[in-house]
Image (cartoon, rainbow, N blue to C red; front, side):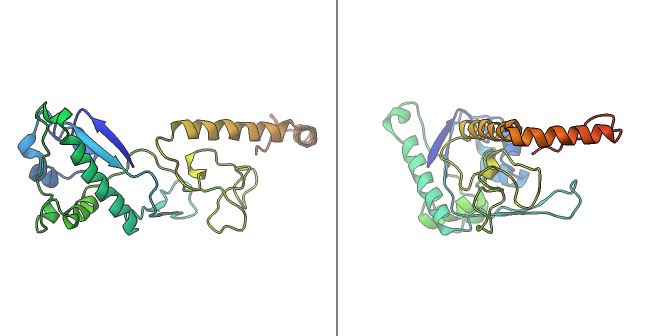
Length: 232
């Protein structure tokens, strides 16, 4: 679990920007946050680092310009709901420490619309609230995992080459079998550096370089205006 403290909240800007970023409808925002529009607020985001729920991404058609089909599968594993629920409790406890209370910190306990029928601040209420107001935060990954050929869910091999497609590699966060803890910036830079080394080592080996030169010569003799080199 990672906690991100922010010097703003969904209501601090009166619903002009953060509301859109959180994907909140006008109806939801007005019912929950209208009472504290433009008030001095701060937020604490409990962020689950290693979710057990898994989604799917599929091709919509054989047209590469069609958007894919995304099935996120958020919170389909009960463990994830439990982790976020306990994270909410810890975030509230953080806001109620003496260090923050001396500045007048207090929890804004307005019930969420579809959870008002449940006893406030109970486990049942938080389970409902977690399902109603949870969002992703930038670190999408693991949609083209690296793994052995025997793994039916593996998309790329240890050289980051796509199974069944010649001359194609994937070199980004999607090849992670499981998401790393914390932000993805450093791991993705590492993946990019390693991927670049893999491509260079493939083309710089004598045998590969010889085959490449032969293909270039062959294509030029056929009258190509420029060499037709297949990358890998």
